[in-house]
Image 1 (cartoon, rainbow, N blue to C red):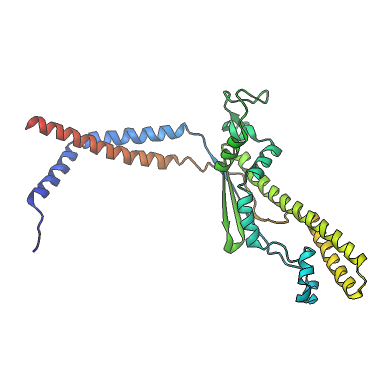
Image 2: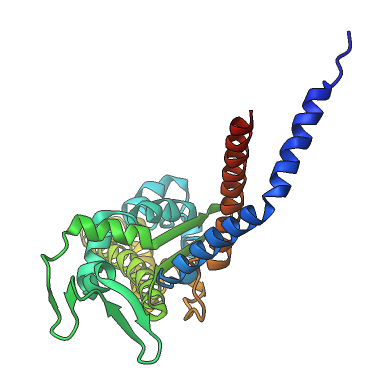
Amino acid sequence: MTTTNKPDDVIHLSSFIALLWSRKILIIVIALVVGAGAYLYSLTMPNIYRSEVITIVPNSQSGPSLSGLGDSLGGLVGLAGLGGGDSAKLRLEQVEELIRSRSFLQGFIDKYEIKPELYAATGWDESTNTTIYDPELYDASTGSWVVREPTEWQLYGLFLEAMQVTILFNKNMLKLNIDHVSPHVAQQWATWLIDELNAFYRLRSAKEASESIQYLENAVEKTDFIFMRDVFATLLEEQIKNDMLVEVKSEYAFETLAPAILPESSSHPKRTLIGIIGLIFGGLLGVIIASALGLKHRLKKD
């Protein structure tokens, strides 16, 4: 059994199209008004600038002189802290949690004293290159809070909103984005965060190296076996090299591929897109209003 479109369906569709066409001016006006309103509203929103830094995590490898020590001494190598260090994947997994942790971010906020920029900043004066603050929250001239100072939890939440972290495990890469009303602040924070991550791992590695060196020095003094003395001496030499590397290499854990640059244009709000969405919404609203008016007119006529 086949079905065919009923003539009434075609008539109703034609009538609806005719109704919209008869009120096309109304629909167009509503669409333009809503679209213009959405765009004008977007102009009241502050410009947000984004700065991005891209880093790579080098694969950790143990020194070549350790390869001939044999599998039987693997326990000593690990005990001495010369097991090759964290793999790139493991380090990325760690930093993915570390950089979002409250203790790390709160320490970052306190160290660089960025509470006003994080909580009270509302804009940026390009002519003077200064951050604009909400006077009802923070008095920039005196450097004092007008209201009660924001809590650590509030600041932590705001920083998480301003920061985006992307981990590319297949490439051993970390991408970090910072959004702020000031392009200079966004660039600074992105750079400082990578510096702090490197400092964290450098400090941890230095502590581990110091403990390993102390252990190996004691082992060399206490052992009576010449072979074991040579083994411990080799391990000690490698650990001292690692300790020196930690001290001299500033980008110890994360090597910068693309440093944070000063953004020249805002990343959002997307004002043109907001205007287009407003225009589409206004058009739909116009169709609804035109249909309602047509139905009302038809009911009165009947």
